Length: 361
Image 1 (cartoon, one colour):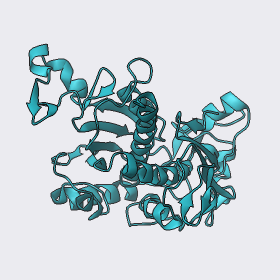
Image 2 (tube, one colour):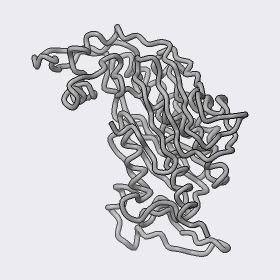
Image 3 (cartoon, one colour):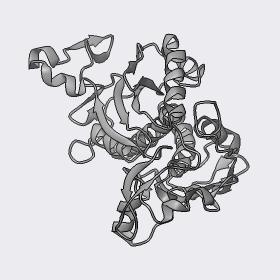
Image 4 (cartoon, one colour):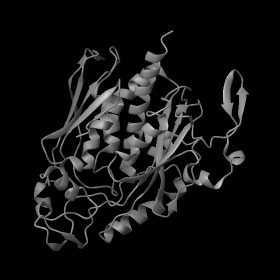
C-alpha cells in the first residue's frame, strides 16, 4: 500500500482514523540516541486536532506510547514502535458516506482500487495517518541534531486563499510561527487570516493555501544525482501528504519567466566555504544540496468534506447529493505546518545517514 518510506531511516505508518489507534514503526534509527515520549509529544501537540478555534474540534490528546526500541532513555538500534490511541472517534457521523462518495475525496478511488474501504472518517485516507509521520520525525530530528547540529527546519503558512503573508525566510523564527494559531510568520496577517477561515467555516465551506518551508544550515552534498535527487524526493514526500496539489522549490514556476543569466546563482567564496550570491536554485543543484538554505512551497487544496450539499453518486452508481457531517478542518494549513516539517526531517535524516555511509574515509 506504499506505507513504507525511507532507505536507511525507514518508517512504516499504520492505523485508520476511527480504528483503535494509529502509529509508526521506525527501522534504522542509530543506537544510543537520547529519546523520551515527551520529545515526541511536543510535535504531536502541534499537529493534534482541537488545539485552537480554527481547526477541527475533535477532542484528541494524541498521547504517544513508545512500545519498543528504547531502554533507559536511549534508542537500542532496534525497531522503534510508537502508538497513539484514538479516543474520540465518532464513526456514526460517516454512515451516509458509507453509501455515497464525497466529491474530491478518496472514497471513490479506494473503492475502485480495493473494492472495499473503511468509510469511518476516511480510514487510511484521513490526515490522522500523519500522526505516525510526525512521531517518526521527532526521532529523526534527534538523529539530525547529532549529524548536523546547525540544521534548522522551519515551515509556516505563506498564504491562505488570496491572503499572502510577507515573510523573510532567512530571518523567520520558530517562535514567530508558533506565536499565533494560524502559524504564519507575518503577525500583521494573523487576524485577517483567522477571520477568513472563520467566515468560510460559517458558510459550511473550506479553503486552501500554501505552506513554505526553509531549511537552514544544510551541509552540501546531500541527495543523489539521478532518481533520488534531493528536490525530487522532497517533492514526492510533500505530495504524499493529504490535500496536497503542488510543489515548487527555489524560483519554482516563476523561474520560467527569467533568462539563464537572470536565473543562475553566481558562486563566490565566503571564507573557506563555496556560496552563492543568490538562491534561485532553492539550495539544490543537480539534485544535490549546495549548502545554501533549502526553500520550497507546498500547495494544499480546500478540504474535500464540506457542510453544504453537493452532487455525487452512490455506491450503487446512482446520482444523488451529499452534505458533509462530522468534524473537519475548514482550512488544513495551520496543522499542515508541523507535518511539512516532519517529512522534511525524515528526508534529511535519511540522506545524512546515506551520505555518512557513502563517504566513510
